[in-house]
Length: 172
Image: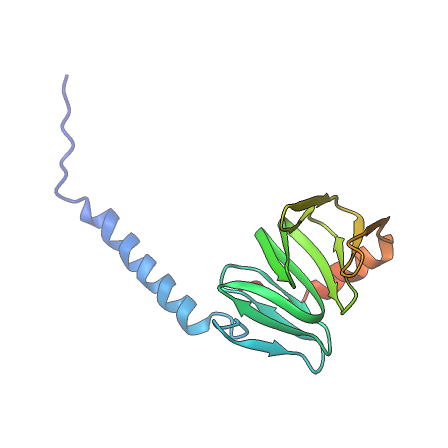
């Protein structure tokens, strides 16, 4: 026996899916996050401030910190930031590039050093030809003057308090 399926009514399946896609796009545009950092803009936090990036990265910028958009990548100019994502994490700090995946890390930048804490994501720290993979649960401090690095474990309480701080922040 041979059965033929009529294809005349396939628009009953395709049309509702198309309408749903258009409605979801409009809904996101109307009610999406309002804390998104726009291109070529800077965020200077007088008090702790949440932020989100168009690629889904989000976090908290501590009081007195400054962050700018560097061709779509957050760049911490001064101070400290707690950053998270369920995908790729990328941040520039001075001439250092920080890469993580599906988790969070904390960064502090001052004139003498940068300090990176790999909270729930390992962090690849790159500067020119230098590369170091910072495992989850460790903190690295890189000296700007001597080029040396100091590694130490992160206190468990710091990891817990950082996770708690991120609970109220929504991804972009």
